[in-house]
Image (tube, rainbow, N blue to C red; front, side, top):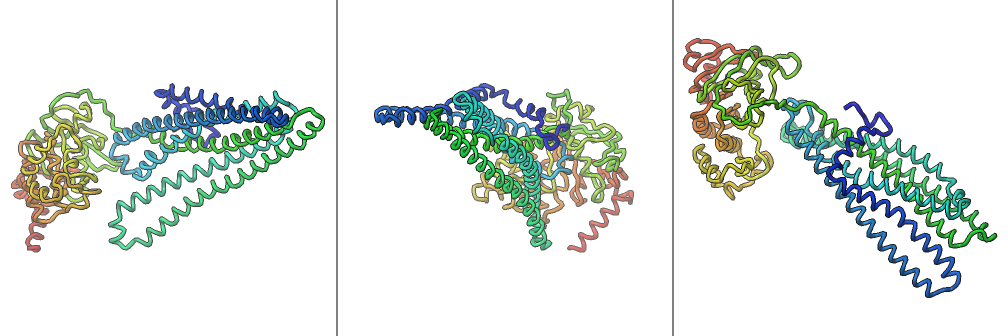
Length: 588
């Protein structure tokens, strides 16, 4: 983003962009601002009433008048408290509504990112932007913008009234104010920089914790607990140091404010009581001015704090808007929005690279008809997974065309395209939820009877029904309570119930035992029957019955044909098959 909070004292263009999120709640915003204006004037009432009480009732020993004034003071105190409650409630309500809308927009934007963006961006950073940074923006509205407006109005009305009431006493009282504004200005700059460091360190903490909790098995398997603990301690130390800078700034600023406040009172008392002696003023005025000084310095001191809340919100806003401005979403310009796809797939001279022109796929061309099964074979890193990632536009090709039913996939609306494709991955991801919800993914079109029927056909109903709660069994995070084979079978059911025209199996049997493999072989036959299928597998036994086999090496098709044809060629495929068959005999 062109504008940067860190580069300016205050970025009004960024602030204007934030304020656009208030548009749906203008009524609440304006009413809250009005309450703030009322509070600024109501604040004058108590000191004025106390002045009258001292100069008229107490001075003249008027007990009846004192009782009446006490009741009036209590009444105004209740009124002021009510206005304060409404002001704070509406300010927080506004802030929560704004961040709800903003967080929805940010998460929707993240959902539309290409997978390539997630390959390069730490997940912890995205979590920080979506959660804690947006929470900070909420404080801009609940404790920043509106409160600043109210405080400024309160300061203005108090100063104006003091000057009106007794200008010379007011000027004496205001002598330390320029020093206070100078201290506030310095404090604002120091605290702003400190807050920026805090946000950066929070993002680093979130990223580190997220990555290491997710990869805890690797940490423990390789005995890295102490090493990673040392790394975390260093990051945590930097986070502490950044927060200490904010503590230091506050610990210097607030005593300075108290000293200046005491100086104002001292000057006012020294000058005021000389005026009382010569009868140019009254004790009630002196007492009311003391109250005004407290009321004046309090919002000025809080103004600095509120402005820092605003600045912190601006820092977080810059980060959030930078994420929103990230152009990593898939172009969804397809005009085809309502059509059933049969599943004929054709690659025409497709080139693809993850970075620059480090080609992963080089001039790939092939076709597969509806209902056929295509198998992709090759060494790790040959480009097999890249081919299947391109069909659903999870990654975008650099050159060439990919057609489904003769239509360029870029001309098909992205949701329609993916609706007709189901993918079963080697590394099955299950949410911390029930088996039923992990299968349906909350689709209202899929009934429980359909799920059970699919599980029976796939061969998984027996093991699911044996679990506590059956289909309502919670598998916990990433399906930790299930075996690899069970997770894989659930992913097969998930693919089956969505009834795709195109099925993709990516290394679906590479990490399971032989017993589970037999079940998955059956599931594969059920899933692939009657639909276009693309199967990626290291185990060649899983692809013998494929209509066509492509042998991929270094991003190019080196062989093509059926299993028997490729065996008879005695080429690359034959070597792979013989190698696996030999190892299989050794295992037996």
